[in-house]
Image (cartoon, rainbow, N blue to C red; front, side):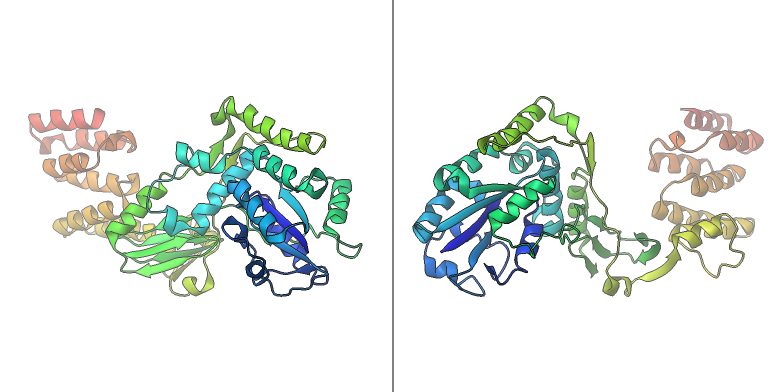
Length: 429
């Protein structure tokens, strides 16, 4: 019984190899699914064969289970009890350890969001680091001792043409069954994005398009799968968003310190086991998480299309002369302020009510706060000025206070001496 087992490592090319080998139906017995995980806990031959689409004794059974490395000794024991003295070959997929670990981290958060999203999951938390960084040499050495060095091989996307040719012979591929490196179904690493607000409409980008997300609607934008849920519980959404803030969207390799040398030594020692030359590793200074770019069509159809990014910029620069409606929700707030400001002498109460609502909904940005402060100072509304500074701490750090101070000096007759002292202190602190 000929069997090819791929016991590791995750995020190192196992999906690519699987997609290539399952095309060779004349050479391999194809499993029902990629990752069988059979030998983690089972060892009966009939059970193993039942997991394959065909059971041709002339073909090789292939088992891609990249988590076998986690408990290699038990897996090896089960393989031997199941297959006995059969023809067993072992293939490890290899990848530079820092990019492999961070890619695995992104994969777990993307593929298993509702498992990992309910608690903080920083890449640098000790328990998380220990999940994604591990000794590679130990399980390889265990498999080599059990099945022999001649029955163990490596695969890497950095392999030379000569090494790929040697691998093809190891796999038993004929000259018409070359590996096609232009076709890799594995998606690049991304971290999901969560959108939710109890009261505000949010803008979500999908490539070059902008969409409006209604209040109380939860949207998980993800590469693997996406979810849109209306009337989502705000307490659950808050927990998910808080936990998402713990995710590390970039990995600075320097944070590993001297441990990086240990990881490199462990990686190179794997090749030394098979008397292969050491590898030249391309280790980046920083690895950035990708962004899920496109909203799925069925979800986009349920949202309001606000137009394109290009349209928004053209409108900003005045290249579009006629715009029927604002391109983005934030523009609605600005236009609302302009409209109210034009009639503020007649509707002072409405001005403050509407502008306070807009500032709370859209945040205290300069284009929203400054008109409000100017009007409040012009009318001598001391309490309203003080209240907005109390509500938004450190407001004067990101609001240009020069125009506001000038407005205060021009309208100082509307305030008592005490109020002037207080306002000048607030504006200048």
